[in-house]
Image (cartoon, rainbow, N blue to C red; front, side, top):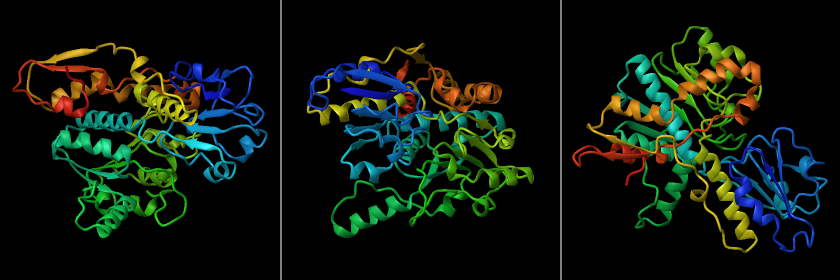
Length: 397
């Protein structure tokens, strides 16, 4: 079996090497092979003999890519979104597809938290006094809301699709306790919050499109003292409208991890951002590797074999694996803990200094190893100290 995988998938060799050599009837007695590729430049000729194709979000999987291949049976995307996948085409050809929803949700939530910590320090903000509006209540929005709850930060969620789904379930069974008991608010309520954080997929058309969801009309509603964070898809914000707003002198603070037209970005917008990064919010080692693990599990299921490995088999120890806290929790301690694991200013500096030297895709490909809070064990020296660090995701004994 020939398995082609994006070269930026962590631990792909460890997870998939043995599966290549299974005589599972897909490729008869042919020699198995595990083949890495560059996601942005993949061609139909390269994958003409693939049995399995494993991609990330920069690879468009459609008829143009697969028209030379008459044997492929499985496509996986080690990412949350599927806007780069022609699902109808795969279904028409009976090609099994799996994505990795939620794989990097924790990573993105921790990116947002790091950005908030940095901006709170920069502008002397008290985080507990802020309201945060979350657009999108899926995996990532949920993980962010959990961390905000742990910190006692008020937040609101806008997600009309989940709101409708919640209402339909309640209508079907009024006596049933819905799994999702969250209160959803209209977009206008979120846009009035001190911080607005975007966590939706790119959706073009339909009842609730997200393409250019934050446009000139919505941007005109923002106050001078607000913070706008986008760590989902570049097309959710109209970058040109945002640039026009900033060049007109508006004071909204901007954190952009995603950009319209990636890998080409609107260069003129960069100086107006507080934090600018190269679509790496979900690029923690754990976040990227969970995508590999989820596709490994899905392929094992398709091949009717029991998975042999899990992510814990491959993750290395953190450079600082454990610390002890000798005081109760406060914002200064939060600042220290978050930055110890992930300081977003590093990625902002790399982006500003290296974007035009290395290029957008190279920054992503050569992204330095970054860990999640869970890689660090926090020991509390007294049982009376707050367990907020553990509720934020730091490990405990």
